[in-house]
Image (cartoon, rainbow, N blue to C red; front, side, top):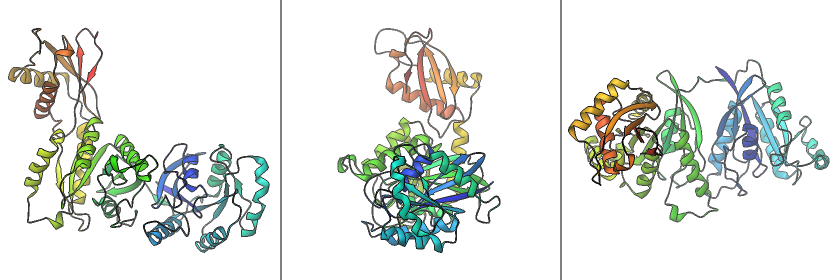
Length: 447
């Protein structure tokens, strides 16, 4: 359905990212005192008074980027304004009107978009008198807010809804997303290039500089007539190289959060370099969270002819044995090779994770597994397996009832899940195995 876009713009350090989080009611954008933290367009859907709109955070006008990406940041701001139905021009009441604000005002006016002037950091009503200088920019009366003190949120949302056009030419049509696909991997694996290729537009900044993407960026795309959210994440590096104040420290935890909220995860691996510790740790976290996983070898155009997809699948199986069930795809974001197939595979895995096995199917599989190899106890006590049942989907959770859960070894758990995967339609997704006492006296032990 058609949805208006509202872009938050302004010079660096006026609190644009804080405003996005404030209006959304949750932490989305990274907030840090360092100027220029936000580079890409960070978007989220907001609903207020019966209207839905896309709220977009942008970088700061005139930012001096530490990695010489100022031009790319400015391009993303311009793209955000071009597609917006309304602009929120944010200024800082503590610093007052600055030359940078005046320069930003010229850029805002040149967009020919409706504008709401938002004066941020007005922590008390006594501070609002200092906003008089901002009238000199020629916009309508400013709206006072304080993200820190929770002031002015409803008033600003009311004003946004009031100024949204009923049937705007700039509205975008967004279907309800069926899945969230998180793309994760180490730095320079090509995640942002892949997101742009899938979106068909420069939705995020692409650069050879490691660590270009700092935040998780949700991008809504249509593929094969189906809608999904693709989550671009910051490239991960070894934790030992991060500090608690490092922006990449926050980015790493955002990548973990993106994995947790995703329906399917694509671990993007640079096919031209060896699988490393970061890839292994990300795989471990993805499997720990029981997320359907696609192992994607990007930059396949650079290695094609030197190795086959089967050889890569065998290679990855040895290095990432915990993800032996995960399908492997070879793709090229640069050449748009195998991208649609990868997206369709994500839909397939999500559907597979939603399968509910009948009790008859499940227990027939359990009988076959036990006939082939039953659990052996580390003690003299006999291990008895009574029956199994599926309690949930996404991920599929199988509860196995036994006489004593502590007798089931970790090695047998892994064996049982592998065999169960072979005997059911849950062939390429993680299975969460829970072993319980038949009399429900023991504490559930998850695997």
